[in-house]
Image (cartoon, rainbow, N blue to C red):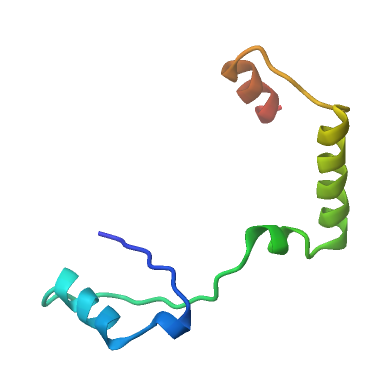
Length: 81
């Protein structure tokens, strides 16, 4: 079983550890800590990626350079090419 808990370190209290122990009694568990990253912020870090994404957003707002598909199968085929 795998569970993911997202919280701020200010919220990390003894009752959280107690709850984990109650959920997984007498079991070996693994705890991984990683800093949460805002996906949008991450994608905009690269100047080239930022320019590409902002241009795509602008295209959507203007209704330009859009691609449409009649069905899911044609979209999948296009993505594979």
